[in-house]
Length: 277
Image (cartoon, rainbow, N blue to C red; front, top):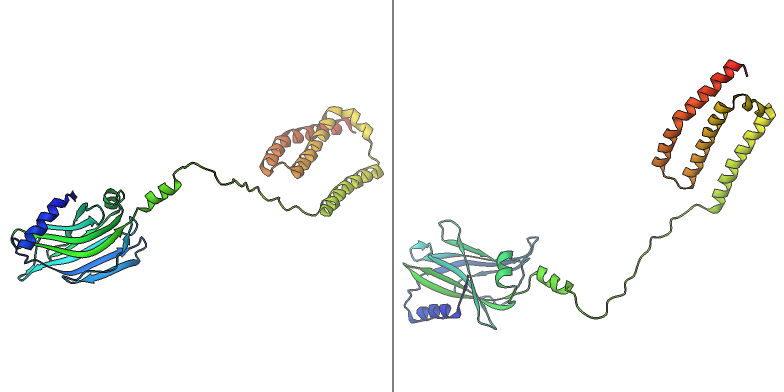
């Protein structure tokens, strides 16, 4: 709630002239400023008419809370008006925020929420004089000046101002490329390749010593050539996986080759048995 300076000047005038009885007493006044983790940044306990000297800085992420107890000579008082006034020291503009009653014990509390901060103080940061403005139709009123606070810009607004685009030279863009993958020593790869080739040569040598008759393939060319071709495809697939094909595509290709390899091998073997080769 934002009121004009004339309203508060009239209230001060009434108090000074004694037209308001001033029977209200504010007691147990507590002023706290905490951060988002709950750590206390500022705390002060006051008794009327003392004030606090330090000027705490308040942002949307460090809410301000003020609690107090309103009494008269007869005990706790239910106020008809309980406001906390913020008056800008430079412009004179005032913002009044209501304090809520916390039960029937006369205790009141006011908190500056993030929404209220952005609504009232984001556009006009600076130093504000803080005061309690209390009123009761039966007991009169009380104006209690507490001290001064500094209302700073909210973190979201300051971040937006920093991130806002401007004109001028930009920082150099530095690309960071991925580091080269560590590979085994070239000697290891060479030894492995020689071992694979050596096994293949040894296999051919064993076949030659056993007297493998390649000419018999002509007697059952269809099944034998198909079967040996699919076996060669498996060898090629193994080489492709070693060179760079991923594991799951390799398994998929192997499953595709499995059925025709089984069919052609069975067909070639049965024909050889029938012909007695």
